[in-house]
Image 1: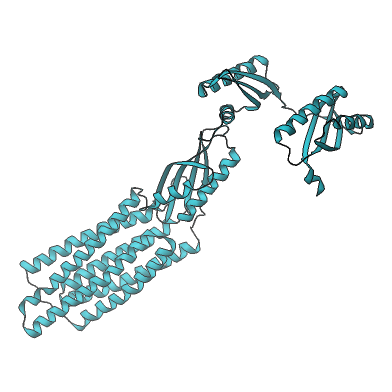
Image 2: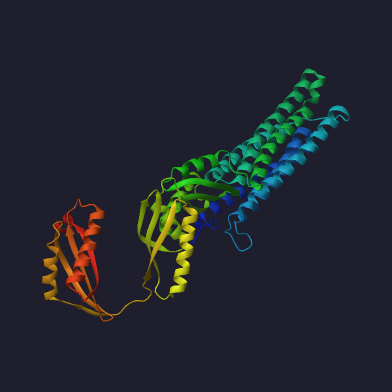
Amino acid sequence: MPNSNEQSTVVTATPDYGSEKHTEKQSVALNSVYAAIGITGLKVVVGISTGSLGILSEAAHSGLDLVAAAITFFSVRVSDRPADATHQYGHGKVENFSAFIETGLLLATCVWIVYEAVKRLFFHSVEIEPSVWAFLVMVVSIAVDFWRSRRLKRVAEKYDSQALLADALHFSTDIWSSSVVILGLLLVLAGRNYHIAWLAKADPVAALAVACIVVYVSWRLARQTIDALLDGAPAGIRTKIIGAIARVDGVLSVERVRIRRGGSKYFADVSVALSRNVTFQKSEQVANAVAGTIHGLLPDADVVVNATPRASRSESMFDRIRAVATRNNLYVHDISVQDIAGALHVEQHVELDERMVLREAHDRVTRLEAEMQAEIPEIASILTHIESEPATIETSDGMFHAPGFETRLAAITRNFPEVIDTHELQFKRVGGRLYLSLHCTMQDNLPLARVHDIQTTMEGKIRQELPDVFRVLIHPEPQTDNRR
């Protein structure tokens, strides 16, 4: 992998601020605020008029839900804003932070409910008047909570919003806690009608049941919130990502997978090992395939893929030699490896900038040879042919026909039975020198090594017969290609 030990590909998602997603999230959060205001007000009025601790505890719980709904509304307004210079990972953590605040408020409410329930059970008895209004407000509360929890959950799942999901969880548990309060009022009423004294304690017991439900909800919220704030990955997703990436063609191994969440957005930082002989273009293709695989598991995730060059088990001696050269930003070709008496001797050609002086070129090649022998100890010696790599665009005097040369060239090619014909001969003068290029049709099934030998021999024969030609370039073509 040229020029670097690591290449990064970043695949980002389009900001959601101002989108249909943002509008729908904000709308459902605002409706939840309105519903919380109405329900809290009703419960406070009825709770005070009846003296029911169960209803008052539900009013406190609904008041807390109002605060939570307001925080959720604020968080969804902010969380979808795109990243900026100050918040480079976006504002999604606002949702997680709002859920954290809700958890603290829930626990504080539990402390108050438990305190009042214990006081009424053991120290200070309060007369309760289970009126029709008490039952009516609790039924209305259940209906409203059912409506908004369903709507919040639908939007939360649609857009993977933790803040909205926390609100939906709150209001779904409110249905059960309100049902417990109704049961407590019914038991108090039954105690009066049937003169069962101990049923008078049903209301504070119901309040304790509400507290238990709130504690349970708080614990679930706390786990989700703390995991998000501490960048905890969703359970099992890392293993799934590693398994999926390992199946991507070109990936040797998965070296690192890091996943974090900010609101409804995921961020994935992945490092994969690729063969060190692949090009930048190929490594980018593999990195994009890896990012696409992650998006299959985490849609719209912000993905960074680091491609790290590694030696593969299938590397040949020639691959290892080229890898060292590539790491030094050099191109080697015409590599020949000979086994002489059990020792490997390497001959190679390397191209260097034609503007480089001999001393600098020789020093660079010497360092290259030393690095090759250090990394590949099987090599006993290296002989490098230094070639100049063109660094300037040459000006041509134009192309021309050379009938005499073409006739002599046809006589040369007749000595090669594998050559079917030659065509598209071009003669041109560049910098006062004569250049010849031609296309050569050969048999389809010729091994590439034989094709190269024929080209090399033909070039030598042409330069012998046509000494005026400075450079010869032969382009081989299969026989079937010229039949199309």
